[in-house]
Length: 500
Image (cartoon, rainbow, N blue to C red; front, side, top):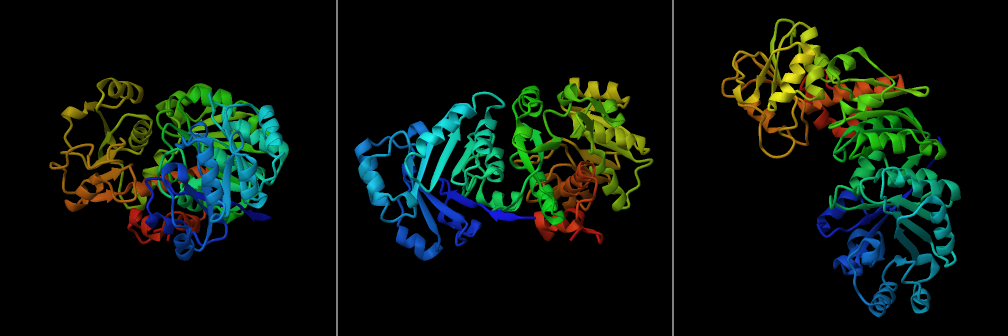
């Protein structure tokens, strides 16, 4: 398959340090370092070149273009003229910086002419044609979506123009538009050197999660939709598998505030097809695992029973709701040689994930008790599944041989979802939460000498099953090692049959 490289532009964010620069291999010719003059980053370019051996871009973003610069036009011109002697690229705003003295100092080969605003595709085409009257190396269009679905406009413009000197993307939550834009001809991707904000990917994310700067042709699009998907490992795992198999596919994060609006304005529209992309499947995460069922054309038996989905598959023109929550737990228990039948199990958390896991354990022969902080939600799950319920305030782990944490507690901070001091000596803890390090629940249970199944094991079980259902073939084990590394992959399982 024919591949090409795109150029990564890494912005040195105020929260970044020079130590962060080493994280994205700045010496590669496919990366620029952007120095934001409007954020007080006036740096010694000789030092940068001597230590980093790469190319430099200078910007002085005004308030109108999402920056912090409030300098007068005269001071802006003076700083651009001075920067032109030291930088490889200079970003000039098309509405305010194209003065004759600036253009004389900054040759076309160094110019990035930019514009930021809210508009539709037809207006964007006219805007690019207007900006390109001034010769430049690159033209940069950033839109500010006002409503769900607006984020597609810059991509539609790229698809219509097919220019190799124009980059366009939507600002805000829709950073997936930055990832799709190169497949439509955009030569650059703008990112941060460090986690300056959740709405901007880091260069490390671009490399690790999406395989940039190398980019294959993209025909099929997959995504994870939820309220907070930026830290999900799903894109990294799925995209590593696509690369290993040579698939023309990309898996992206699709954050949404409202599932119905996301569905009607984006999925049900013809926008993806107009871009030459086939949206094939979606994984669904909190808080949409129940409300998403309202738009499904059909659903699996387990989904209907538990009223929860985490996977949407496109079958022709219809969408089928399925769930892989059970595959994240039951096969892992089997691999650890933990018998389910006859176990006294407590599932803490009665959200969509907890309901599916509880139902699957009960069907496998466990005596399951539901536990939840909210009594209302717990009683709803109890009535739905026909299982006993205990409020979290009255719950004790004593007497349970299997305890599953199906809450998000432990993802951030040092909290644990329930007390462990009465935990039986032969009890098994399953934590569905994962992170770069073992969660507080995992650490405390292991310190007590109890058997523990790490959240990474649960994650890998689910992702493998999702990939199989979405693509019709297994996820290659080597893709898992590439995505998370042998240390993390093997940390989860701690068994001879580890994936790496």
